[in-house]
Amino acid sequence: MALLRAFIRTARMARNMSRLAAGLPADDEVLLDAPDERLGPALVAAGRGEYGPAAKLLATTREAAEWENRDRYAMRLAAFARSRDEWLEEWQGACPHDPDARLVKAELAVRRGWESPARVELLRQVGPLIVAAAAGDPHDPVPWRIALDHARGTHAGHSEFEKLWGEAVRRSPHHYGCHVAALQYLSAAWYGSHRECFDFAERAAQDALPGSLVQALPVRAAFAYLTEGGGAAVPRERLDAAADLAIAVSATYDAADAWPAEVRNLLTYVLIRLQRWTDALEQLRLIGPYATSFPWDRVSDDPLGQFLELRDGVRLEVASGMPLHPRSGRDGRARSGDH
Image (cartoon, rainbow, N blue to C red):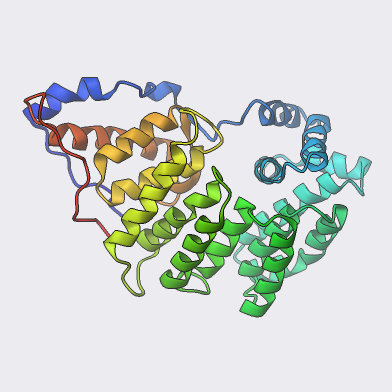
């Protein structure tokens, strides 16, 4: 799928390209899925076959009820264990009832099930692992996020999914990961529609806590619409409103902050598809060195390369739209979208 048209090199591009690089790190400074200062040491230790730092990290998030961090760290640790799981096996052998080891084990099993051609059968077999993870801490919403992902892969009906959703929000009403899992279930690609997806995302955003990434949920609905195709058309105004809301959420975080990096990468993709080049360039400056695999891995086998290529493309588009006279300007929002 071509995201951008061929870029026309004009005199305006040559004049403006160099100054549009201001605030953007060099290509070799951009990192893909860089861990934060807490997760990094745990991954390094896991690479040496040591589970202690990972166990301590997840125990800390559980004891402090840091559910958002706990979810992200569990996913990253499970992703690492997909190719190197000896440290996790040793952890489980030493602490078979550790709720944190059970959580990573359940996440890993669901990920492996999703990757298999026999997805439904394998996912149904890992149900007991999710039950065990949920029993580890009755207050933890993260096993219920895993259960929501599991239910989508096993073709769970709406009533069953709603029960799991109720368990998740009872533990953490504004948990971002659980909301993302529900949004995916309601997408047109799975068991809902674009209308259901947007309605859910917009209601959740309205009810979200100030500064919560849940406020940016509508831009995920926009991404689903722009990438899945089919179904009823979504008005351009609704897509722009989703992007505008995500821009406002992004503005509440510091530039080059790893925490909102995935949302900013996703927002940038949507802005590119909407041909809002100036807005996209601003998000690229806010992203700084923190490129994320999602959403670029949905359109390329080389997500970092795709990110850098589109970053250059956005600069070219902005430069081509800038007048030679320095006092002229434009708002960067094209009204004709690439839907």
